[in-house]
Length: 192
Image 1 (spheres, one colour):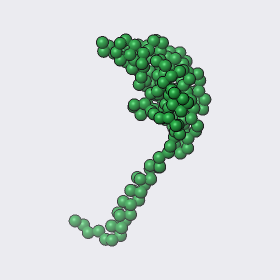
Image 2 (cartoon, rainbow, N blue to C red):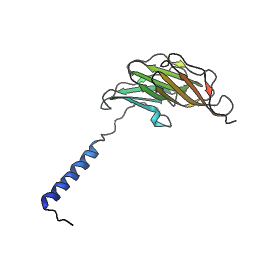
Image 3 (cartoon, rainbow, N blue to C red):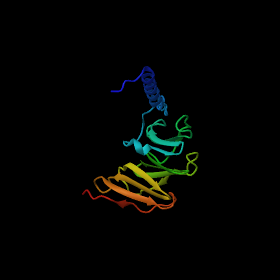
Image 4 (tube, helix red, strand yellow):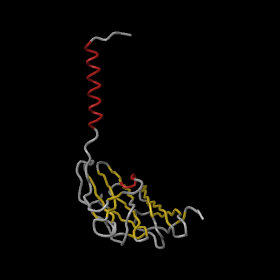
């Protein structure tokens, strides 16, 4: 072994201390985002509830702050999570809106969720600043749940689990014009 003098050991020790401080400094304290008196929940797959575009973070969740039924809410941060805007209610369709999923492409933010035994869609064309009306995507669903949404250019893809045929099957729907119109549901599985 080559012996090191004290200045080399001091330099290596100092470098290790600085690196360990910088690694720990990357995580800030927890930031509470909801203040509902009733349970706030995100989807069973948390990854579907958050989407980013640059420094803008979009999140969606459900909670029952407005009464008996749960509703879908949205919130955004435009500075990489340092501060957060107000809660925006997205669902007005009826009862039991839960399991939201979100996708973002540029200024367009897309949210899907089941409510009142149907699948609904809502979008923002200005990065979450304002929202359009709810659009009912399904017409004969039964106990739909766990939707997921993905976007590629102007094409939106939505899948969800649905019990309309007597057992849970996976259904698919797409829009080729950023959610303005939608094609018919397509059943993807045949579990019998």
